[in-house]
Image (cartoon, rainbow, N blue to C red; front, side):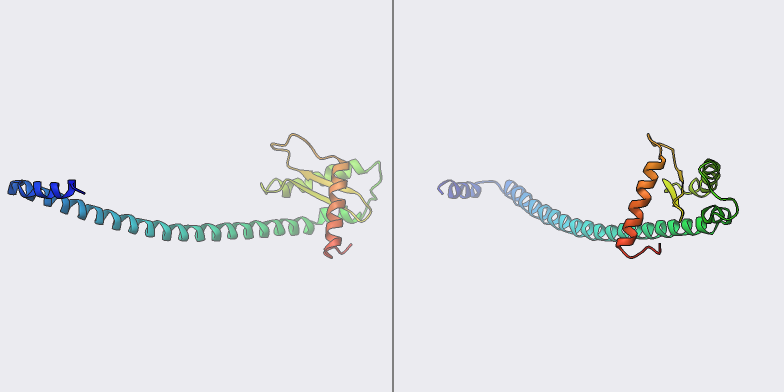
Length: 172
């Protein structure tokens, strides 16, 4: 406590130029601290408002993207189901599918499904199981280290059927 009154007594002995210099330094320090504090507060409020706005824009964009992809997937499935050649093979209209003729039908169906699958980069596979149990599929082989086989497709279509039946979404 003794040092502070000693310092004040010492200031009394300073020349006027030194007193003006010290008072200006204290005034500049006070003003710069006040302006800096206000600037930090304003920038914090600005950043917070922009972050909220950007977050809402990102959420809206992601929501729109999900909706568009769902519509695209639905539209793709409608196109596949409305193709007359595919419907004829699935309904087994005309020539009957036997174990001898199945590879030819499978090859033809894979070609037909590829027309729809190759146009959609988000599709990895298209699988169809007929009422008689015949399996047809197409898969996007780009970047995959495996390929689908009859057993894998059979297992996936069975799981899909069970899921749809458990949620009362299947008509078959």
